[in-house]
Structures are given as structure tokens and as C-alpha cells.
Length: 296
Image 1 (cartoon, rainbow, N blue to C red):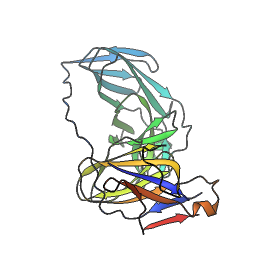
Image 2 (cartoon, helix red, strand yellow):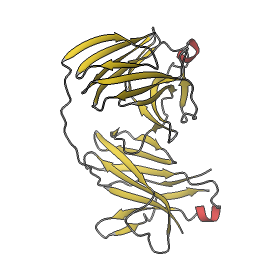
Image 3 (cartoon, rainbow, N blue to C red):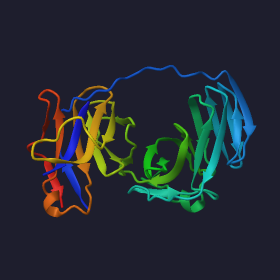
């Protein structure tokens, strides 16, 4: 993997065009459980519904439905999430339904979640009116503790019924948004994102942005840490922001790294900020000689 750190001897710092980062992660194949039965039942939002193991169960609620498959007998609870409490990222406008802004999925049973396909109730008329032209319907996974968002690809938006169908990857809270065409993709750390020859802009909690393109279809995963096993470069002091960037398959990559530092930092200190990357060959932090800038 490739690690980088921001060091110092409202506001952003940019490193431009790192053309050949060679990055890799372990890829593990797995076999998903195949449902052996199908079932239907009626549920009430906020109340648990018992589902059998390896059974694709369609739970119908008033105005919406959830198709769920778990590997063990489980209790599935889908609840309303009343309103958006954390400002959505730039380019995202909250979509609402008549009785809620989103939903929280909880699963008690200890097994693996194989499928959780949510078909929402109809959007309000005013919300549906936002989806037009280059603006599309989207879903955001919301981390309540981190107050951060992660974009989830939806299956479909049906204009006639004003409903959204989406595969929920895990238990958690999900909100819905009208997404502008060129909006950055909010992403959790340790979450693989697809990349291609066309650049994609990924934004992460805490002010880190990665604009990245790869020579062919690939994935990229970013992790963040506040400490490192590697000693700071001589005469430099880290900001407690270390990022590890990994590809699914090692190949040529072009990337721009951006980090928003604290607005309370003096301009004289901010002007000395630099990104450095760890060179495993020389066992040393390396500061690129060109391509960086600081907006103070």
C-alpha cells in the first residue's frame, strides 16, 4: 500500500498529478448463500419482523417494501428516520417522503446480510420536482456518530410512482438526495470505490478529497489514521493525518490529493504545509518537488 501524511514545519492544500502510484490490496473470493425459500409478511415501521434463515422474505409496510435475506434466523427492524440533521455534501439536496426523510435498518440474529432491497414510498411532489435534467435521485448511508455520508448507488428511480429502489449494504441509516451531475462522491474510509480512465472525485470525512483515474476499471480504498509507525521527517511535524491509498489491482494511476486544514491555523504555518509519501524502498518520507500548492 502507499501511505501519505500532511506535515507542517477556510482553506485547502493540494498535491497535483501523482502519475504512477503502485498500490495493492488482497482480493478474496467468497461464495454467497443462495436462498432456499421465499416468504412474504406484513411489517410495521419501528417493530421487529422475524425472518427465517436463507429465506428471501418480502416485508410489506404501508407504502413501501423490504426484501431481505439473512444466513441465520433474524429479527429485522425498519424504522423511519425523521429528518436530516447533518448538512448534506455540496451538490446533494435532501429528498423527503410524506412521513420521513429516510430509514434505519437494524438486524438482530448474528448471521450475514445477503440482501436488503428497499423500495421507498413515493417522494413528495416537491421532492420529485428536484429530479430533472442532470439531477438524479441518490441514496446516502449516514454514520450518526461520525456525522458523515457515504453514497450508495440506487437500482432505479421510477418517475411515475416517484419511488426509489436501492440495495442496502448493511444495517444503518439511509437518507435520499437529489444529486447534481458533477457532485463529488462522499465516501467512508475503508470503503472500496470503483475507478476508471475518467477521473472521479471522492470526498472523505475530515476534509480529505481524492481525485483519481486509473488506466482501466479498478477500485481504490482509502484509510485514515492519526498516528504512524514511521518517524516524522527531520525538522517537520505531522498534523495527525495519515492516509493509506490502495488499489484492487496495481496499475498506473493519476491522482490529486486535497486536505482542508483547520481554519484556526495561522497563514504563516499553513503556507509550510506539505504532503509526503512513504517510500518503502528507501524507508523514508518523500516530499514531491513540484505539483503542490497551499490556499491560505
